[in-house]
Length: 382
Image 1: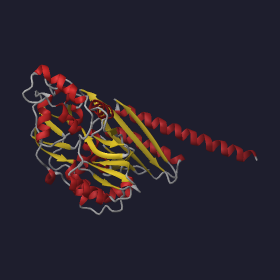
Image 2 (image 1 turned 180 degrees about the vertical axis):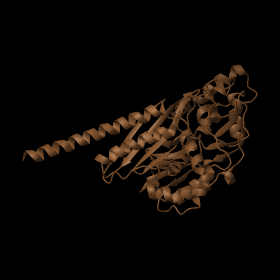
Image 3 (image 1 turned 120 degrees about the horizontal axis):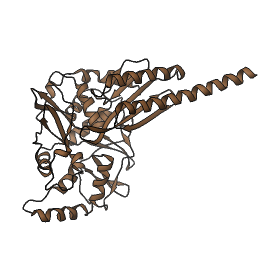
Image 4 (image 1 turned 45 degrees about the vertical axis):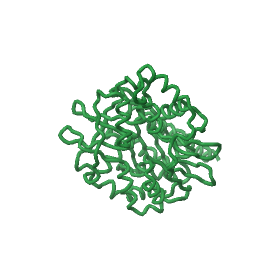
């Protein structure tokens, strides 16, 4: 399935202004406790919360808060991290890049140094649902072989898996059967201190909870499809069930999972280059233009040796970190008619990560060039 065709299909959405999509944000005080923030997220049925500090937009989400330990006394400040924001008149394309890069579900809209609203991934999905997407199939979108957890495993293990792998959805299984899906939101509910409990008892009660079995914790409100279901059906089922995921099942066997992020990854930014290049989640900061320009030069060199290269795709996402220092993951796929070359690197310096991937591509070029040279020598020796 050509990324060029997909890009053209969604170009109307990407060029749309965000103004009509702005909704109410969940605003917090950076001096609040973690338990207070969890309660605020629960009451507003929200994944993300925001605040402004020193003219910078800060964000925290349920996945971040799973790392909290002493939530009865711990402040939320260590979990807050700076995030790019939007302004009225910005495009959906900019919103999608921020959502994909930060792996969040809402982007703050700032006006006069105040957060006046958010753009939600869910509302962008509603725009996608208005198009005819029947030619895009689930098996082109889904994440295959998702991590699952047995119903008899303790909640502490589920929390560890979600924290280490940065997951928001964990299907709970009994054998091969999916019973429900545990989300970061459900896990947070288990670690909220119960009301009218003394501080000395909070820690012991939380430990007791986390050592209990996963059991039936999670949601059984599950959208599902088969690998050849079309994207229109997938999006409609997710919106109808008001869920953030869709399970891909074939003959009662779990094949994969589709989340908001998987669908938004279809909304790419096209970069001008000799080889069609599509980028998802590239931040506007961190010398992004220089990084992209250097990478397109590498692709130009690639095409001189691999003349059948059709297109390339880059996915940039921010993982975890502290303060202003974050770990980045960059995944690159280069497509030819007969083969796909995939490269992936992580690191704290985005420019260095791209340089490492470019280095791997250049080594691939050298290997191909060397092979062609040997073939020509054999031909001459006849």
